[in-house]
View 1 (cartoon, helix red, strand yellow):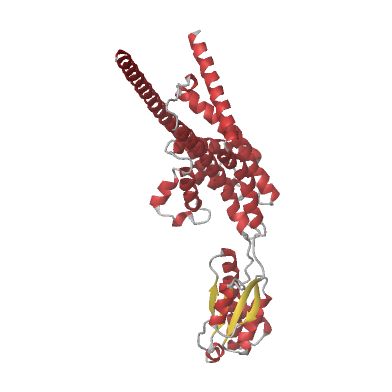
View 2: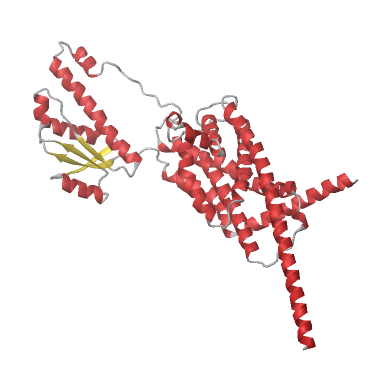
Length: 421
């Protein structure tokens, strides 16, 4: 009977901790922002900004020092492309740079004075392309348009110089191979479809860790300002503490996870090729690993503001370590080893392959098993860390009680001496 009574007490204590954590999460404005508002609003804002996928009609200013027929042909072909719009002609580079600095133009095409003369002499010539590197999409449009136009003009010039006898041979000289370009897994070739699925998974981990860390920091600040904190009988077991907190966070992020991985891609027409069974199997260990990882990180948080400085700072490096925005093969071995510590590394890779590339759960078996391994590892580590915290809290409470007792004894002795006097 004692065993069943202990089990019943453990379940009751875990439920008490769950209710308390849920109540605190809803009362604390900071935790509520990271648990509810940020996961709901931030993906919508980020997806809406990049919903156009690609940019068109990027304004470019031209500095034409050649004033030749070939330079005018280059300008017309660039202006005819869908990605670039010739804004105006500048007298010199200083005027063009002034337009770019005022954000009226996003790039500069500088055609040198010797442009036509070098081509007539069958010498190599150059065209200067200056891009605003603050925005990747505009830089890509300006640069790739200039490359495509120069390649087309160069092929036409070579064909004209070779003087082929027939029109068909001239066409072959311009385009010896017809390339049918088909972007795999990203038909629009846009930024949103390639990066935003990874960002959604990273948001889930970062907001979860931020909310748990802020809640822990708030608890430590409150304990610091109280002279005596009674030892709550519900917080005497490690598993019941970890279980109660875990249940609170899991209930919230089961809903947030479904919203981020199903609702947001549906609203903005991102690729969705994963079967819901495979997606459910992937999200379960990912959310569990993120929860236990956040509970471990929360144990080093002393002030509620510290977690924002720590987690927000590492968000961009974590996105690069996933291998989505930067090729995984180009990441040094040291940083690849560091990436194994974070659930987002394998969660993002598996989610992108399932949802964007149409892979099955068997195709991401490695990432799936690693996530379960991280879940078990961080669960045991969370139990160890929380056990250490319980012992420290108990010792500190005992010390405070002893100090209070000695203080009361001294006060009683002083009162007795005053009465005798």
